Image 1: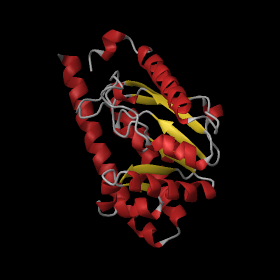
Image 2: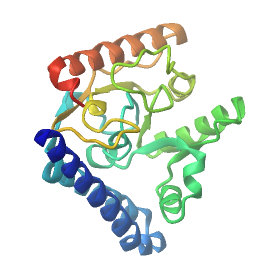
Image 3: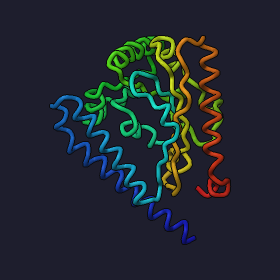
Length: 252
């Protein structure tokens, strides 16, 4: 009981700090919208670093990066699992000026949406079908021409740790980018959902692991690419989740 109360208090503290920090950063860096976009990119990086620090300080969540030898240094597609809100911010820390594929609705959020436009994120209208894929590909070409890594979540949404891909199948967006941009795809596995789960209030101490996997070179046929990407991501993610003792994961 005492352990549960302590975790509740620490989770409350983190959530308060997270939202306060986010609001402060959005307001503080709103003038950067009038400056070259690199100023906003720098601000996003400081925001994400601050969140990592607050996680460690308030709820005891640390972060470990693996496979950094596979981290792209220029134009590439980063295809990552998506289990937590943490997965949407960490790229500002570990990649150089990433272009993230995101829902178009997020651009409507005051200031935050403006910053996403300023930093040339790739917004997708998911209701537009093939038209949305063509627009995403055009924006992707612009990002590649500038040497920027593109971050996409192949399943298109957050999935719970241990969830079956039948519940959240891989979407065609990552395949469209792979075929259209002729750059390598770097799969990224993670276990963030064990510590900062989606649609849950409680946070759990431990270590979030984010692992860059061996890049997939351009040139594969679509079905072959889809199979390789899915196999690498699912296998590596299951392995990361299995590192956490089952009895500990069950206590979340």
